[in-house]
Length: 360
Image (cartoon, rainbow, N blue to C red; front, side, top):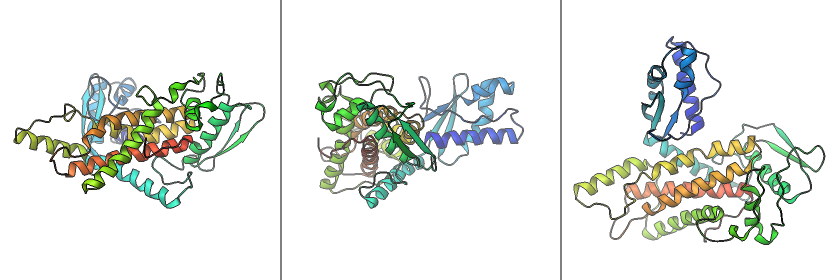
């Protein structure tokens, strides 16, 4: 379940509460659902109860108590907690994680069937929200404007729209130009250097974009994709493949087995909740892609790819069995999640016009 789907779920909960006479408010046009902040719990949180408290003439926590059962009854939601002054914290069940991975897999299979055609519909994060919309981009003769417009052709196309690029006045897309020629960086690093900063920021054309270190966001994104492909190859060598399943529940089962046999994990990260950040980043990818299209901002997509990459790099050491450990259902589920992350990274880089190598 994505943040967009959860937002609709919360809106339906508000409508039901209004229809049943529990609340007397105007139903808002949209609801913001985000990962929980400090002190929050679960997978996502919303402040809708605080928004509705004043128009409803009730304390925010009371509004939250009214909305809680309506949200809890939704398929894919396992629990809803109320924290602080009235934040609703939503826990997703395992079916939601499994459905997310399968949705990404289906998009990847569809893309493979269409081969080199990059603007296919059906890929994860792609939609027809802009179907029939023609976006006219009028740009100056400038390398950064050209690269941004080229990326927007694909990004807006991923949402069903079509872009027409013209070099004419009045200009409606004029990102701050680069101070020097990015060509010496090579095609991929040059595009990243021009696309990663927001349009109002001047891009840095330096060799930092070429270094293979964690300080380089482009390296982290491409390295994370290469690690996802390596995990697939290594798992094949060990004789197992991925199976979408509820990673978190299986991780808890593994933890219970370790505790029962008094075998604490030798990996200090094993009991860290690494799954949730990766699941959250993958679930938010369609939202990030839609925002990049709506706001003509490829940098939003680039920054989100960095978030996916960082979550995958923190998670990837849990995927393969260690030592004499046999591949388990948890390993197959973790592998499916890692492969899904690799698919999202490859798709996002492709939309930016940047290569995603299998080896790095």
